[in-house]
Length: 306
Image (cartoon, rainbow, N blue to C red; front, side):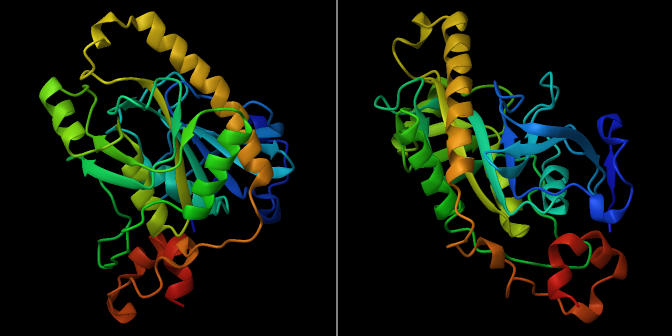
């Protein structure tokens, strides 16, 4: 089983396995959200996984009475391109920490007039236009096919929407997030195709996380923070970089309030099926799965391959 490697901030802690850090809710912060305000009793933990190092150290602490693990998706200082983010390591590390719900936060562009910069959307669908990502933990002698018709957790998504309303942030409770490869932004032609297909927002990260979270049987939902109108809007050229940055900063402040409310109101009981996503999904005869593959994926498939 991969081991947790404590950073200097936590070296004084006991080395016994019983003291290994645990969290129930994971938060992945995107552009503009590189830390989580309000966390208390914090410590940084670096985690080694079979899929390499995560984007950064996890900051683990207490928020609204619950254990939370925060991770900056692009690393502090924004070091990783969307296609370079170590998604498998990030999600596997969450699994090792005991996280069973992930809240993702990301900056997006709006594809519809009514979805304005400064507002939030909680997507219930994704459309994948990436082409250079690794989307699965499986392979190397084990095959699994998870259902992904409903790619986000409806319970967590509902909590995020309610928390936004409670925090006085305009939110849309459903919509489609089209995920492009990046790092470049869309051409005008691409943006108009996305609009004709009636997608609501465009981003570069979330669908990859969502697939891996489903394979890891972790609930996943996202807050899509709208920063601009992409490039299709006739008045887009009149918007300055300073205005976009101001919107990004305000979105981050609003996200902090929404996250605190979401963590506070997250019910202990699960009303979804995310935690059983692999039940019946593993097609490979356990007898022929290589031992090294079983060991590598123990945190995810161990309960099914005893």
